[in-house]
Length: 485
Image (cartoon, rainbow, N blue to C red; front, side):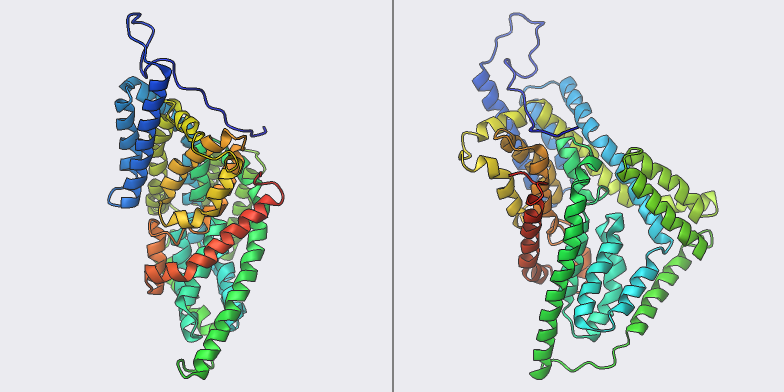
C-alpha cells in the first residue's frame, strides 16, 4: 500500500468534550477551540520534552501524566482520554510485542555463543595493524549489534578490543567513536529502538518502513569501513608522530592471539556461569544460525507478522538451547528487564500519541505552524530537521525526539505535501548516528565507562565525525528517492 502525505482533520466545531445531548450548551467559536488546542498541545509537548531532558524521572512519568493532565485542562472527559489511550495503544501494540520477543530471541542466540568465533576471527584478522584494527572494530560492532541493544554490543566489543588499543597506543576515544557509529547506523533494524519508536509515532508498519532502508544500510556499512580506514590512517600518523617526539613508547611484539584467547576465555567463563542446562556444541550453534536466518527471512519476506516471527523464534530457541523448563525460564527472566524497559516506554507513549492525535492538538499545532514556517522552507522542513539530527541528540532524548518532535514535524511538513515516510526517514537517518553520543542515552554512559573515558571528551572527539556521517547518509537516502525532496 503506498504511503502518501498525512492529512489531519480540522479542529472540532464545538468545545472539546461537548456533546449533542445538551441542546442549550453554548458553542465555542472554532478560533477559540483551535487556540486552546494549540496552546495546550504545545505545553504538553514542551513540558514532556523538558522533563525527559531533565532526566530525574523515568520516561513513563512524563509520557503518561503530561498528556493526561493536558487533555483534562483542554476540557476532555476521562472517558474521552480513555478512548485516546486505546487509539494510541493500537499504534504501538504490534511494535511493542515484536520488541519484547526480539530482545529475548537475540539474547538467547548471543548466549549460545554464535557470534563469538566471528568476533575472535576479526580480532586475529587485524594482525595488530592500526588501520585493520579500526576497520575490524567497525565490523565487530555491526555484527554484535544484530540484537539492536547497545548495552550488549558495548559489553561484547569494548572489553575485547580495549587491551589491543592500549597495546598499540591507539586512542580509547577512537574505539568509542567507531563502536558507537557502527552500532548506531545498524540500529535502523526493525527491532532496534529508533525505527520502532518512529513507526509507532506515525502509526506505520515497521517492516514496510524498513525495506527501503536496506539499501541505505548496505551503503552505510561500506561508508563506515572506508571512514574507519581513514580514521585508522589518521591514528597511525598520530601515533608515529608521538613516538618520534618521545611522547609515546614504541610498541613491538603485540600478541593479537593472546588478546583473542583472552576474549574466548572470558566468553567461556560467562557460558559456564549460565549453568549446565545450556547446550553449547557445534550442532546447536549450526542450528541457531539456521534459526536466526529463518526468522529474519520469514519476517522480511512478509510471510508472517514480525511479532509472530519472533514469538515462534523464541519458542524454537528455548528448547534448542536449554534442556529444562526451569533453565528456559531463567533465560527468559535474564532478558526480561531489557524487554520491559523498552516496551514499557512504548506503552506509556501510547497515551501521549493518542492524546496529541485524537484530540486534534497536533493538527491544530500544525495549522498554526503554517503561519510561522516560510513558504520556501516548508517543503524541505523534514530535511532541515534531519540535517540537525545529531546536534538535536544533545538537546533531546530519543523518546522526546521520536514521540514529540517527529509527529510535529510530520504534521507540519505534511501540509506542504511531504510524505510521512520522507519525514520519518530524514529524521531517523539524520539522528540515529548520534544515538550513543547523547548524554540522555543510558548506553552512552555504559560505553564511556567501559573505555574508562569522560563523556565530555567523547562528545568533543565524536561529534563532528558522527554529524558528518549522518549528513552523508541523508544524501545517500535522497539519491534513490528514499527521502523525497
